[in-house]
Amino acid sequence: MEEDEGAGASQWALVLGASSGSGAAISEAVARRPGLDVFGVHRGRYPDSGARMEASVREAGRRAVLWQADASTPEAAEAGVEALRRVAGPRSVKLFVHSIAGASVGQFLAEGEDRLHARRIRRTFDTMAHSFIYWAQALVAADMLAPEARLLGLQNPLDVTHLHNTGLISASKAALEMYVQHLAMELGPLGHRVNLLKFATVMTPALKHVYSPEALVRLEAAHARMHPAGRMCTVEEVARFVSVLVGDDAAWFNGATIDFTGGMTLRLMDLVLNP
Image 1 (tube, rainbow, N blue to C red):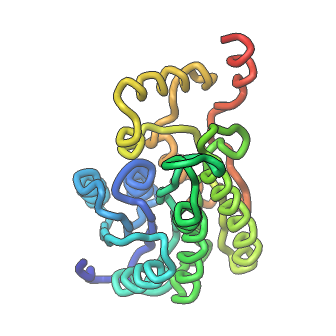
Image 2: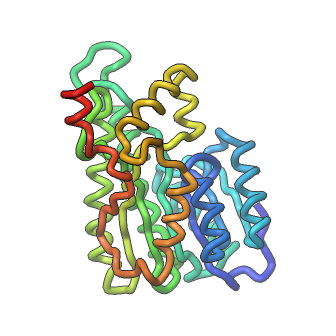
């Protein structure tokens, strides 16, 4: 990672999980509007996608710095914020987006590989929830938040409807929601805003890694039936809305779980009773 000349001259987006999926799309969108430089943290699993994101940000006339690390630990948060500070300077982070995933699926009382044992529970909570606090603490301690900064976590509809093997994901996302609300109270008086954006399933490299092509076809068809719009949401649509949340018109959102699911759960009962 190289330092850029003129560091501190512009505002930055710090995006965890920036190399693919929602994180990459958000990085590209906020580089275009409102025109943020991007410091993207990633684990190195999607180098081609990361390179495309980096090129897209630079095509928009903004700087892009990729920093490879496991973002789920407090040590990584402190090191990452220090690396960002060397590049961007203090009070430069306008947007912080927590878009990392690393959850375990399974059941709490299962036997064998499906059992959610202690190590998997700790890892999921560190990745999906606790790391939001680690990075927020590091940003505040290093005086990195720009005036009226926006901190954003990502949520899914598993808070209102459940799959049999996603209890740990639901629990960690519930913890994330509480972290968002309490940080909103702590940072609100300083002019900052902390929110949670809830959106439905989107097609990402991680999803394609988990499911076979045949399963993805079934998944997409099921989502088309669930959504009133008759199709799945896209990462680009999510990313464009995040760029709106950075703007002044969204400044009154704070401590909110913003529903961007497109009505995904509205027809679940109808689909069950009238398949």
